[in-house]
Structures are given as structure tokens and as C-alpha cells.
Length: 294
Ligand SMILES: NC(=O)c1ccc[n+]([C@@H]2O[C@H](COP(=O)([O-])OP(=O)(O)OC[C@H]3O[C@@H](n4cnc5c(N)ncnc54)[C@H](OP(=O)(O)O)[C@@H]3O)[C@@H](O)[C@H]2O)c1
Image (cartoon, rainbow, N blue to C red; front, side, top):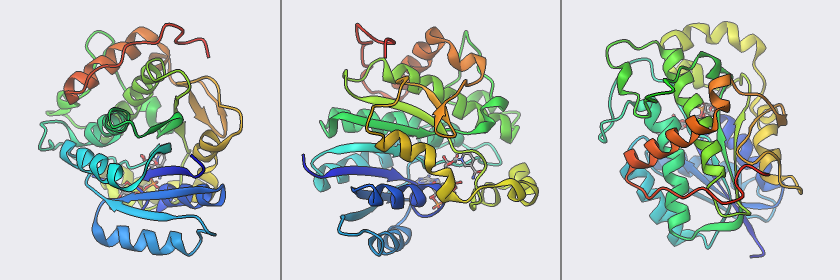
């Protein structure tokens, strides 16, 4: 495995494209995943112009639906021999309640379930390199998230009758931290998984989201960082020579950070992971014997 390959979802622009650019500069071949054919073509063109001898591929799929995740897995099987880095960056904070074709609330489908599903699909296909690193993009808005420790709602359908946008988005990302922590305890020994919060970024995210996020975009924009700066944490997790520790941890500003209290509960993490994989219909990975020691 001489070439190292990074797959980045949500690479049409914003944080995903900045991350892809920096991973190319770090010597990775890159697969930029976008939502549609037009944005895939554009992303490939922009990234190829900065590839400095590395290979750029672009694929497109709609990750809100499980069929889209499976289609991406099949495309990757045909395209690359191995994946060294997976950056689960695609995300959105929808302004209202709607369910996907799979009967899941959209924010939870895209931000929580799709990253875990894609990871299991790649693992099942034998595409993850033995030392693969999986980085899932989180958010500072996890502080707005809620999780019922006795009955964590990984489908988001409990938000059907009342939909506070920030709390729903924060909850999906908070559950994502828990699922990532449990995943890290179950991956083969030399693989790792992390959650990375980029801070507030100057992208189209808030305006596209609509709702209260669109309203705060103008004010938030004053404090927002450029995507290239925000990419520092995921890029560091993907590229650092020494495997970042703790495996399964939450990272901010390039260093381990404390997520909100509910996200530090390993029993809850295991419960969230089990519920997610059951919902997705994929086989649960058993915890490793030495899990939690790294
Ligand atoms: N902006 C912030 O202040 C901020 C703060 C904390 C965390 N984040 C997180 O950072 C990540 C990147 O966000 P960003 O700020 O760079 O905004 P962005 O430019 O909107 O990036 C999100 C990406 O996800 C893609 N995406 C959305 N829905 C998709 C779907 N159904 N299928 C496939 N791809 C889909 C978008 O594609 P389209 O372009 O086609 O919509 C876009 O490329 C997200 O996970 C977000 O939650 C952002």
C-alpha cells in the first residue's frame, strides 16, 4: 500500500473541500464525495488543479438515504483498493421535521447514522486499511443536544411533534460522539475513530440550513473562521505521525477536549452504538478485549 487514500464526504465546498485540499498536500490520493453529479465534476476540477501529482476522484451520492450509502460503498469498491482515512464531513441542520425513505428524521439520518453506516460498509467490504482512521465531524452545538440515557432516540423520530432545530442538530451530533466512542472500542486493534468539532466556520452551512441558523448566520459570521483554518483538527487527526489518543475521543482546536457529560458515558455509548447498528440492519462489532486502554 504505497499510496494513501482519503475519502471525504461533503467535499463540494466548505470544510470538506478544505480538508480534501490539505490531505492532498499531505500526500494522500483523495476521493471527494458530493451530493450530485454537477458538484462532483466541479469538486474534481478544483481539487485536481491543486493535486500536485496526487490522484483526485469524485463520486456523488445522497447520504441521507441508506441506499445512497450502499451505492457509495459499491462505487468505492470499484475505485480504490483501500481507504486509509475516512472523513465523515457531510452534514446539515434541517429546519423542519421530515423523514427519509428509511423512516428516520433527516438530521439524524445524515449526521449520525450515515457515518456509522458508511464505516461498516467499508469495513465489511475489506476496504479499510489496517491502520485506517475515521474522523466524524461534530459541532460545538452538541451542548444543545439531549439524550435520554434510558432510551436514546437514534432515529430522531421523537422530535416529530416539536422540532427545535438547534437541539435536534445538537442531539444528532451528540449521539454521534457516543457512537464514535463505542465504534473505536470495536474496530480492529490498529484502526481508530474520532469526533472532531471544527468550531464556527464561514461556509454556506447556516444559510442553507434555514430556520434559526439562517437568522444567526449574519452575526455568527463575524466570529467564523475560514474553512482552511477549521480543517486543522480533522487534518491533524488524519495525518499525525503518532496515532492520536484517546481513540474514540472528541477533539477541538487540534487537541482532545471534553464533550458534554452525557457523551462521556461508556455504557450509554455502547447502547447508542447497538441501537444505531440495529436500526441500520448491519452486524454489530463486538467490543475488543483491550478496548478503552488506548
Ligand atoms: N459551518 C459551521 O459553522 C459548522 C460548525 C460546526 C460543525 N459543522 C459541520 O461541519 C461539516 C461541514 O459543514 P460546512 O460548514 O462545511 O457546510 P457545507 O459547505 O454545507 O458542507 C456540508 C456538506 O455536506 C453535504 N451534504 C448535505 N446533505 C447531504 C446529503 N444528503 N448527501 C450528501 N451530502 C450532503 C453538502 O452538500 P451540498 O453542498 O450539496 O448541500 C455539503 O457539501 C458538517 O458536518 C457540519 O455539521 C459546521
